[in-house]
Structures are given as C-alpha cells and as structure tokens.
Length: 351
Image (cartoon, rainbow, N blue to C red; front, side, top):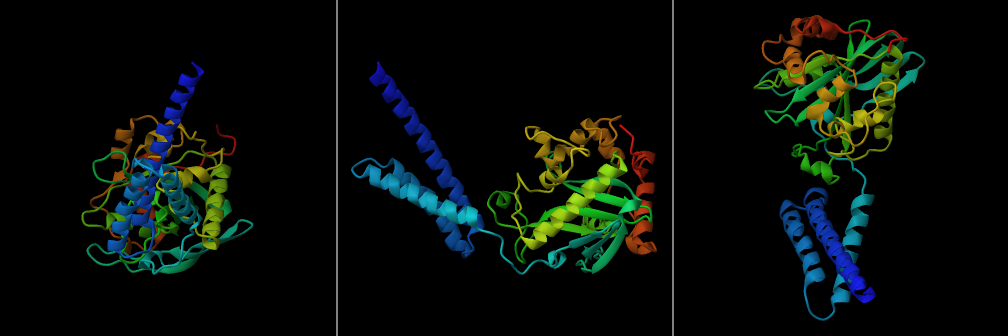
C-alpha cells in the first residue's frame, strides 16, 4: 500500500514538474520575442526554438533522461536569472516621452520640472512642449477620475487622474509604457519587461485634448472624486514621490503589477481608497468606474453605464487654442458635463 501510494505521489509530482517546465518554456519563449534586443528574425526564431528544445529535452524517451532534464532546467534557470535581473535601458524615446518629470516639494509649494504642455492639432503631428510649473498644494480643490475607453470592449480602457487647484489649473497624471521610436504599445509586451514605466504629468489641454484631437476622437469621461482635501493632497504627494523614484531608477511597465490602473491603486493611501488585491476591478481599468462607485469615490446614484454616458466627451469640443489659458479650457470642459462634475473636495471632517 505504501509503495503504491509512493508511486502515485511520484507520478503526480512528475506531472506537476512537466506542467511547470512547459509553462516556463512557453513564457520564456515569449520573453525572448519581447524582451531580448535581437533582430526581429532572430527573436522570432528563438521564441519558437527555446520552448521546443526545453520540451524535447524534458519529455523525449530513452537514455540520459536525467542529464537531459538537468540541461533543460539549467537553460530555464539561466534565462530566468537574466530576465528578472534586467533593468530598463536608455533608448531613443518618442518625442512626447523624451523627458522624465521630477518634482520638488517645499512646504506647500511644489515645482514640477518637465511638466508637459504639448500642442495637438487634429490631423497633424503633436508639438512637444516642456515647462517648469509651480503649484500651491494648500489650494488643491479636488481631483477627477478620467477614463478613456478603448473601443467596444468594456474591459479595455485607460485611467488617469487630474488634480485641480484654486487658480483653475489642473495637473493630469497618466501612467504609461515608455515607447522607443519605431515601437508601438503592446499590452502583451507588458508581461515581458519590454518597456519602462513612464509617468506622464502635464496640463489638461495636453493630456486630455491629445485624446480628443485624434481622428476619430477618443472618448474621455471625467468624474469628480469625493474625498477630503487631506486625502487628495497625500495622494498627490505620493504620486510625485513615485515620479522622482522612477526618474532616479527606472522600472518596467507591467500589464498586471505596474499599469495605468494598478500603479495608481498601489500609490493610493488608505484614507483615499483601499482595494483588496483579489478584486478583479483593481487589475482591469475598464471596470474601474464601478469599483470607484462602490468605494464612494465618485457618484453612485446611477449605473456605471449611465454615468459614463452623462460624463463623456468626444465630439464638438472646442480647441484649447480658442481659450486664453489652460485653466479657461478646463473650466469649459466641466461646463459641458453634469453639475456634479464641477466637484469640490469634502471638508476635513467629512465621512
């Protein structure tokens, strides 16, 4: 009985080991395709050759099985060590991501360098502009959740935050995958340490209008966030600290762990929002609105679908150049939304 049980356990462990080896081989094959800076043809060949070699070494019958499996494990271990020890390298970045933003906080005064305020004309190439902007943290008036849906698939969206100040200016924060010239965004690549994370920070007439100026325009939804001034300020300061850390030591964008949604969730103080890791909406930006409604971060009097329709902007938005300032254009945007979108921070003693 003991012998039969031992054999059964051994077989089960063998099956588990085989599954792990196959999964590792396939994952590392994709990693070769997305991660190693080889010519495309070499990466393509390597992405097929590596998992096939690992599977053949592990499962082929005949003599020398122990030695062959040791070679397969050594190959997996070597590639894993190289893969997980790699750090982002400097590249020739696209024009709108050329410079890293940084922030210096001195009391209530924050100075943001490489604050982006690019110009976007429909049908024309964007014109990057980088400035140094100063804001008074004591005059924070609120924050908005901004959602940019991607097509008809509900799960796909991009999430940003916009922090508003008493002078009417806003600071938009968008967590992106930094793109080298000639390389386009690929969500799958976010599983394989290809692109560094890039915290874009700039004006609304840049980061919001950039979406609306496309042909056809993307939809942008703006939802006022209901939290007190202290929580919003702490959240903003945490984001600024993260921006400085990324400038000092770049990290990789990760579709699961460090994305437009998860990074903002990771940085949120408990007084702003606490989301358990097992809530699937934490990981899928397209479902963020229902999550934020449940947390009472945004209005919950309507369904997410009704809220999205009421707070969406797409067609017929006037150009920022028609307004004297970024603040004036931001005010115009909010005048097009329901009254609740004007928003205001709750007093410090609000629930």
